[in-house]
Image (cartoon, rainbow, N blue to C red; front, side):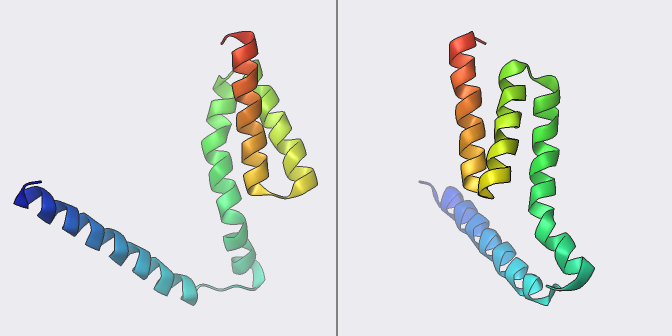
Length: 100
């Protein structure tokens, strides 16, 4: 590793820790009750939907069925990890079976 690479790596690590620390400090100032608190609690789900919706819309049957499985698993388990795992496994399995 050259000195330039080491300096660049150290600068990137410092920037990453500064961003994380700043986010933690700002996060403690955010409201946790009321409408704003509810909005902030729902935000991760809306971001996931904004990422997944175009994939499902432009996908085929494996993606559509995977999205339906995600909905069912999310409804019954309320587990984000379980929902993601079930959806990914469904899409992978259907792609293997259907050859797409």
